[in-house]
Length: 490
Image (cartoon, helix red, strand yellow):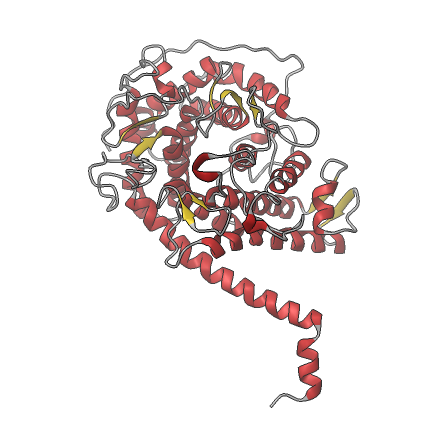
């Protein structure tokens, strides 16, 4: 039986709060462990030819979702596939040896897809490389669609380069024969077409997309280094990467990223920007505003503005004040399938913060500037502009608050994931019921990367630290040459 004094102590607000937080953290750890296993299994189930959920899909082709109606996502998107394979490749490099055959099947499938004529064009001038999606068997999709989408080649190159870099020390000849030809096509495409408009990652807006430009800059930077390591050249990488970076700066409005340069009547606050910071994350980079690193003042200010834009419009966020995690979607004006929160965007909000925590830990300090002050004040009202070393109480209290905030977004996903953990594309804004396409591959990929960053597992650096904005910005391009890749033999 509890004594009166012990009972009083346990009910004291501080003790009760600490005990509750410890229990919630343990619950979250358990959820992350089980959900991570399910996420990997579900991704593999959505990849042909052996994926149990996508019968009929070609070998190595990543299917967006098994859903064939309301909505029909039974296709392979170049963007989704590139992002998903980058996750699997990073996991393979970290020790998941069983994934290698799937990675090789993916690279083989992409060598074939690059040569498929489609409504965006042919391989001969590179135009066909920007076709957004293909049938599950690898044939062209000829229906009306938002095309071209220019992020796909960049994201595919990034994935293949990651695998190539892993092999290059021992299997350089294999990399040159099986990976470089496809990567070279994609890099040449980016260098030639980056300065032309296209559709954004949500396939709705024609214009210039921050996410696309960010992905293109990264691909050319790492593509240049990859070429050199193979004894090859990528002149377009070297000439165009600085110009793309220069254009990337134009999306910043002083407080947030305007995610699309297009006349679409939106505020510009969009998950596009948070996903871009996650894509640009380099574990060896400083908190660099130029490349919108996750811990940069720009990226943190943008994170606040983006998350806050959903607080008052979703019923599931009722009562969630600034500085507390909330369900977030693509953009506030969204009406697709009811305009709901998405699992992958809510996870991206967490992942950016986990990335930032990693970067602060590496550099053993954090800085608060006038630009990022509002973000930090939401988490700690006493936050002030300044530089704080990792042994300071301010650093410790702020990083603890950021960690709790990041975990809060994962807790939102935990709350609205159905029993069993299956992740659809969305959950409804009114009551959090799963909505739209079931078992979305990208949702599972986003869960894995958020969980891994939380655990301190990070991908290899890509070269962000050497990125500098040129004194003169030009809307240039470098005409590329394109060659049909030989089907790899592993």
